[in-house]
Length: 317
Image 1 (cartoon, rainbow, N blue to C red):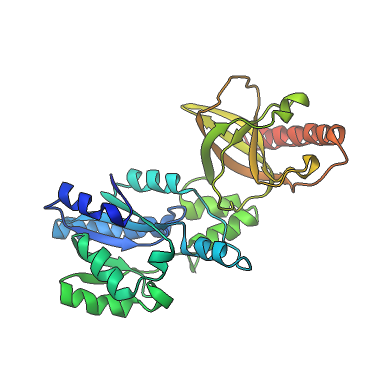
Image 2 (cartoon, helix red, strand yellow; image 1 turned 120 degrees about the horizontal axis):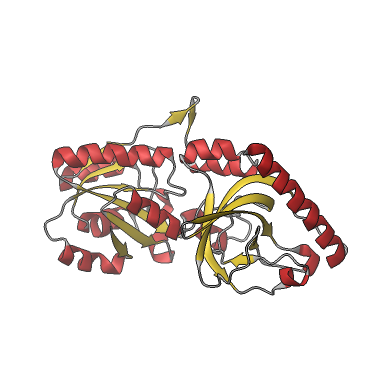
């Protein structure tokens, strides 16, 4: 899969793919759930019929994340997965080109006309598939009807994506976030078509876990929020090996933490994995994060959490 990193690399893309033409779609594609996969499947059907390749255009950060940074009173929605996982999922699903379009002040202030002509018009798009509620451009003045009219002038077929439902409810990133916040991992698994996971690189922490006989692997987190908070029973994948463990996602108030950290204690494991990328599957919630009176009380609670987690895994095997 070819990755276009920003508007400034469109010309390089055109040089490398002078004869390719595309069916494209635009969206956040957070989590790449069943609804997204249905769009990709419909795009593939059209692509085969019209001899096109598939392109997915997505912004980073998400627009709501950008506005949350601009307006402190606005809270960004939690992110299901970081952009690297999105990229890998698109690649796994056979997308030919992914366009990483940076959402910044310039893009925010771009009129629909300029966005359509200068960006979409230079991507060799012959068909464009979007939702009829899609809004874009300065003051969100661009919409589906605008693109239909633009497409008629430019020879681009603009097609409407169909709503994909499960149990008479639309499959959406919002619905998945709500399931994860409510600890309904089975619902999230159905909507995602896979268990909910987070993958990240193991980084050095303060090594507090070693001092209380519970060593942890700290995973680097993106700036965006994750839809999980607290202590969880988890499954960990390191390369092709799988382990059980327990994870804490939170601020670590007992030691005065201020930034979110994902700490994973892997059962029956003592290897050095700093710098490696591991995948954590969240299976069930153990408890909310809380502040303890000191390290001794925290250590006792962690022992109880580990016992509960092992018993829960045993009862579900």
